[in-house]
Length: 577
Image 1: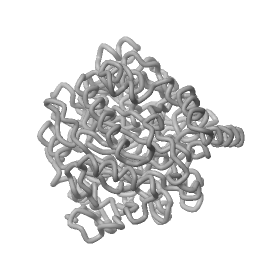
Image 2: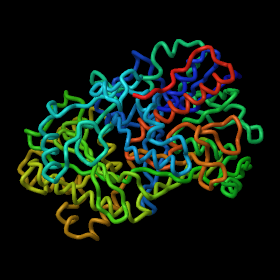
Image 3: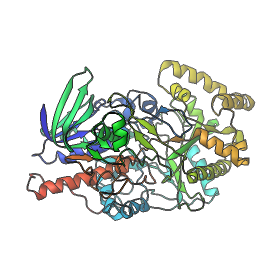
Image 4: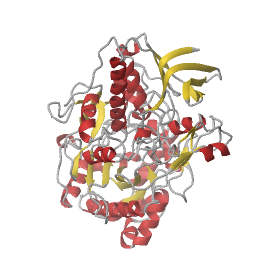
C-alpha cells in the first residue's frame, strides 16, 4: 500500500493534464492509474500516431469492449467506443481540435457554473495549445503542450474543394479559423497533430521530462475497481492488475478522470448517487445525489457516403483525410443559430474500398435530448447500462432532418457526380466495423469489393444499395418527411462525445453533482475532472474542451496549495493569449 497526495483515476485527456500540472509541485506525490496500455515517448504504437484514426478506432485493443450504449429507446445496444489507453479518447479520436463557441461557456456560467464563461475559459484554451497557423492571434496560444494545425485550402485535395464549392453555392461564407471566428461558414478543420502525427494528451503532457519526476508514479494496465470510503470521505482506491492482483492506493484526494460513463459508475459503486437506485443493488448510500449519471449528452449524428470517381480519390499514402468542415443554422423554430455541424473525410475507411468513398458526418450542436448512465450490478466487472436517448427531444430530430436536406443540396452543387444515386446513407453498423478491422483477410476482401465499385454504374449502384445503404435512396428520403424521420430514428448514433453525467452546479441544485472545481457535493477528498462536468455539451468535439477543463481545475488546485504555503515550484497559471 502506498500513499499519495493525489490519486488520479484514468489516464485520458484530463488525467494526463492533472498528472503533469500537479506533479510540477515537487512536494506533492501523484499517482496516475490507467486501465489500458501506456504509450511512452518513442514507444507509441504506429496506429495511434497515424493521422488517419479509423484503424485504431475500429479495433478493440484500445477501447472498453464490453461498454455498450443504446442510441434511442428503440435501438439495440451497440459498442460505444471509449478509450482504454494512455491518453484516453485523445489517443483514438479523429484528432479534431474544436473549442466550440463563446455562447457555450457563457451558458455554463449563467446556469450554475459561475467562473466558466468564455472570458474565464479562453486563457486555458490558450494555455493548452501551440497553434501553428495563428500563433500571433489574440485568441490563440503558441507555447502549450497540444500542437494544433489546419490543412489550408491551397493544400486540399479535389474532394475537399468540391465539398467547399457545394457549401459556397448554398451561401456558406469562408472562415479561416473555426476557433476564432464564430459564425456560420466553412473552414479548414483544426486538429491536434504535428508533422502528420497525432498529438494526444499523453504525448503532450506525459513527455519524457514529466515522466522523470520522482514524485509522479504512472501505472498502466491497472483497473480501478472501487473507491475506498470512510463514510462520505474518500480514502483511496482499490485497483486490480491483469494477473488478478489487487492493490490499494491511499490518497489525500481521489480525482476521477475516467470519463462521462465510467466516472459516475465509480461514484455509484462508492455509494454516491440516487438512494433508491443504489438500495435496489444492495449498495449503501453515503451521499444522496440525484444527478449522478443523469444529464448524459452526445451529439446526435448521421453519416453519408459518396462514390468517388478516380479524380476525387486521395492516395492511401496521404494519411490525413478529414480537412474541411462547416457550421450552419437549421432554421428550426425556437432553436439557436449555428446549431448544426458538418464535416467531411476524403476516405471512408483505411482500405482500397474506403478510398473510393467520401464520407460526411452531420450532427446537432448543443442537443436538447438527455440520457443516463445507471448501474446494473455492484460488480465492477459489469459495465454500466447506458441510454443516450438521442432523439427524446423532437427538436433534435427536426434539426437533423434540416441538416440532411442541406447536405443533399451541398452535394448536388459540389460537382462530385452527375447522378444523385452516387450519394447515399451509410452507417457504422457492426458489420461495417468488422470489415474495418485491419488485417490481411479484410484487406483482400475490400480490395476485391473496391474493384466491383469501379464496374459500370448500374452494377455499382446495386452493390451500394445491397451492402452499404440497406436499400435506402436519398431521393426517397428527401421527398417524404415521414420516410426521412424514420430513417433518422433508425440510423442516428452518438459521435462518442459523452458528457454531463456529473455536472457542475450549486449545492442543493437537483441535478448538480460537483462544484465548479469538480469537488463532489456532500463528499470529502473526492473530485471529478473530465467531460462529466459539462453542464451542457458545447458546439464542439469534447477533447479540447475536456483538456481546458482539466487545465483550469488543475490551476485552481495548485494555487490553493500555494496559498497554504505548500509549494516549492511556482505554478504556470494561465494568462490571456
